[in-house]
Length: 133
Image (cartoon, rainbow, N blue to C red; front, side, top):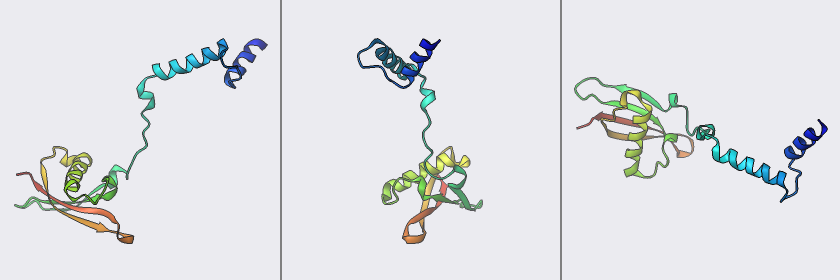
């Protein structure tokens, strides 16, 4: 029993010399674990940005002939607010992914207004959308 405990403690504390067979077995076991473990065990990516419930807020919904809606989109959803041509594309994708009613993606952005906070930084965008033509 003492021999088994000694082997376990030396393996746990990595006290074998390089080139010995117990060292080689421990290295082989680690390599096999890394290579043969399922990928699903290692999908613990941190969440980036605000919670999904706070990313899009419907401000106005006009159901008349114009059929436009205005959403407030949190600026943390976007990579960079400086790029104007890509901003419309990024906003379109962010709205399509985060709003259940816009998942089909058949809408067009009519107007983008930045909402500034402290220090003149963009906090969110008011985005007016309309039907796709």
